[in-house]
Amino acid sequence: MKTKVPFFDLAVQFRSIENEIKSALDDVFQNQQFIMGPKVQALEEAIAHYCQTQYAIGVASGSDALLLSLMACGVGTGDEVLLPPFTFFATAGSVSRLGATPVFVDIDGETYNMDPSKIEEKITAKTKAILPVHLFGQCADMDPLLEIAKEKKLSVIEDAAQALGAEYKPNAGSEGRRAGQIGDLGCFSFYPTKNLGAFGDAGMVVTDHPLLTEKVRLLRVHGSQPKYFHKTIGINSRLDTIQAAILLVKLKYLEKWTAERQRKAERYQQQFENLLSSVKGFKLPTVQFQNRHIFHQYVIRVPERDRLRKFLAEEGIGTDIYYPVPLHLQECYSFLKYRRGDLPVSEKASEEVLALPIYPELTEDQQTVVVNRIKAFYSK
Ligand SMILES: Cc1ncc(COP(=O)(O)O)c(C=O)c1O
Image (cartoon, rainbow, N blue to C red):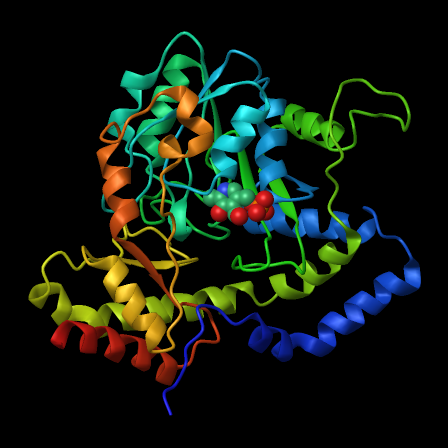
């Protein structure tokens, strides 16, 4: 019988911490405080500490973290926000929901993050912010981006949804370059399959700015302070106490889980070594500037991606495609009048990328099966 390897397997992780989770949940059930409260505050403090920021504000999802951060920076109708098209929809959707326009900047073909050399040409008098994404768990190249933002007086909001614990240029001697801490605000998602995943939706905004903190805190509760007195028009985006209780338990294991992911990435790297020279166009993830990559995803690149994916599915091996259609070519953005060929690096990547199983609980045997099946495909 063939060994099946699922793309991810949350149940194995749950079983390893089941008792702790149940006891944390029981606490919440006994207290009957389901919205905010001490557990949400404790999680905010723990995430701020982990991200090396002064403040963290719990919100209902990563998408809301982006929306609220943009609102706090005053982004609204008529403004433009620069962001990459090779990302999850929320990065652009949050901009559009505020009546602003996403302006897509092509990516670097090695890291899949926004190409800093292509930012300046997209800046207009309407540009209000830059929204880089730390895709797959590696920080975007932030130094040149920050320089441009400073010169043009633009806000920088990091979409760090996939990058909790990632570090930018950790060996450059500069302090505190954790994802989320580099720009004005950082946005995280605790969607269940993220490296730190809740049992539902949850998110967090981190920042070092007291004023922005105050704004996000206010905006997440319909702008009310005190209750029923509304200073501004916000939304309802609170982090559930149940999710906070679960995340507090899981956070204790995050470093260990990250190390496991990194070990698995290294193992893939070694085991695929010979395909790099023997298969034309076969590419493995590139780690830039010795960044601390947390491998939320392990994404390879192959020209015959769809055939390989089909073959692996038949062999019982789960894979996924992040992302099959770059955002500038999505139907909902046809009004922006982008054409195929406008952002060629993103378009090519969307045809060739393939995410392989990488989770802390993936066994060596399972990983070997994945590698061997891919090698079998190429030896056919
Ligand atoms: C890059 C990126 N941005 C934003 C989000 C939105 O987060 P959420 O699903 O928690 O709303 C996600 C995750 O789903 C993501 O991967």
